[in-house]
Length: 192
Image 1: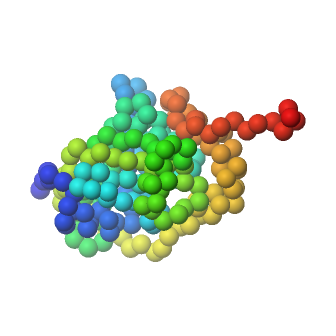
Image 2: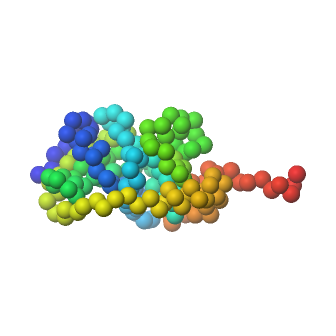
Image 3: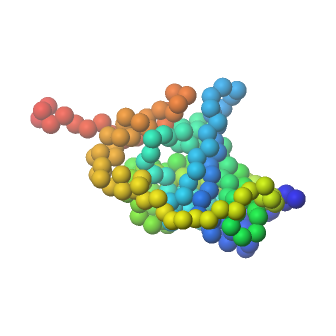
């Protein structure tokens, strides 16, 4: 049976902090556009800041749908499922904001997480509704270990290569909304 909670505290906080994976859902405003659901699971990239605020470290990847949707309307849901132990699903509904690596306050927020190559932003969620439900339909699954491919890939690219990749892949959402378009355009050394 589902239940709405006043805040993320006690049992709920312990549950969300223990999960090795979570899902983020966002959508553009209006009847058109694509709803996006993104899995997240790099260890050390999620934090409960207080009873009504969570954040996660957003890593450079092939898309930037969450960033685009948050810039447009701020709506976000973060969901955690128990794949081990007692069944449970926790959803955090709220308003999200993007703090990019170029923004004031980024360094302070990024310090909440383990360093990960390719970090492009911190997504901060002001949680307006907290609910949990039974999770009886979720299978039991075991975590075999981390896939460290994305951080290694970004580390090989280096800072300039990450920015070039974002300029190529992250400037707009699949629906054409502005996404991660904050990277400065490199200067041409031949222009002196």
